[in-house]
Amino acid sequence: MFDTAAHYLRRSVRKLTPALIFCLGFLPLLATEQEMPLDYRLNEHIILIPAGRDHRAMMQTTVFQPNGPGPYPLLIINHGKDMGLPSDQQRDRFIVMATAFVQRGYAVMVPMRQGFASSTGRYHDHGCNMRANGYDQARDIRDAVLFAREQPWVDPDRIVVAGQSYGGMATIALGTEDLPGVRGLLNFAGGLRDRDERCDWRNELVKAFASYGEKNRIRSLWMYGVNDSLFAPDLVARMHEAFVNAGGHARLVEYGAFKRDSHGMLASRDGVKVWWNETERFLKQIDMPTSIIYKVTPPPTIPATHFASLDDVEAVPFLSDKGRAAYRDYLAKELPRAFAISPTGSWSWAEEGEDPDSRALATCQLASAEPCQLYSVDKDIVWPADTVAANDQKTPALAGGM
Figure 1 (cartoon, helix red, strand yellow):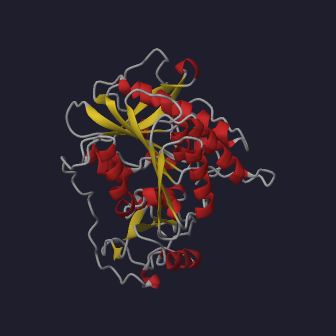
Figure 2 (cartoon, helix red, strand yellow):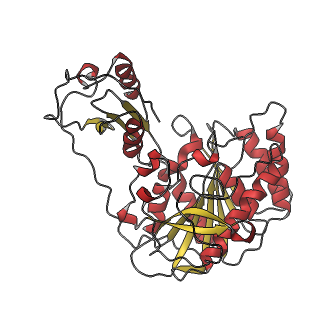
């Protein structure tokens, strides 16, 4: 089923402050995560939120916030589920959405639910029972909300909860509870698909949203694109109709095709143009801030070096024939994108989503005993012209794209 050893704190710990920061290099994370830097522009740091029965589990949670002590209105963003083991999933950041909200004076939390990434506890899979899947994940989000309301840097009466894919479905399930301080819910491409051929997952989704609608307590905005690879427009219409007919309060916004797949729109830097206007309208309706009051420094850029023309495949150092074929494929990828190489012949590309530069470098490094460097970013060549001759080849290693 999918949608898209440090000692953790004891369950008695109920208050964590932004000062409680864990450096990624000292956490037992995946190698790809160890390479992902914290974003100083947004005061990014990681805290642990108690969750589950008796609060024995700890959720690895990314926090972004403006400078100063607060208290700030809060946005909680909930992640989806990738294929594979939840524990292999990387820490989600939703850096584009987080930036937009920090600019408007919000603190932002992105909790990794139990069993995901470096969170402890277990992920519970209820198979084709979509209703139970949503409710189970909503319990972790509720724990994050209750924790947040106790923090001195959070305004406990001004909270918005958002979610993408499985996180969007769990966010709507959360709306069946009367949670103090939570004014509204944002559902971006919410749902869950089951690959078991015996599961009629589409109809089960419709039933689940009908159940959530019957008990709905918090109004919501839903946004789905027409070229969503998981949830087609007819299914989205059925889910929304079932929710509203059962008594739920939700406005559905269907937007046009977004790149190759609108399911990943929220993670794209170009997605802001799609989701912000409708989100702003919704935030105003629930009396939440929408004006930009903080300036966030633009992320640093790597200058172009003009080492070679972008489409000169033969100029790329170190690559085997397979690596050059991968670079040709890279040239057709969506922006933002990055291509990394190493003297060992290792290579990797990453496109779209969060921080393709770091993702390309991290995956390249998994297959290389020597440091990887970026060769191309977006439409530029950033390889230093004086680094090493292109013919100085070593035994090629292989990596892959992300």
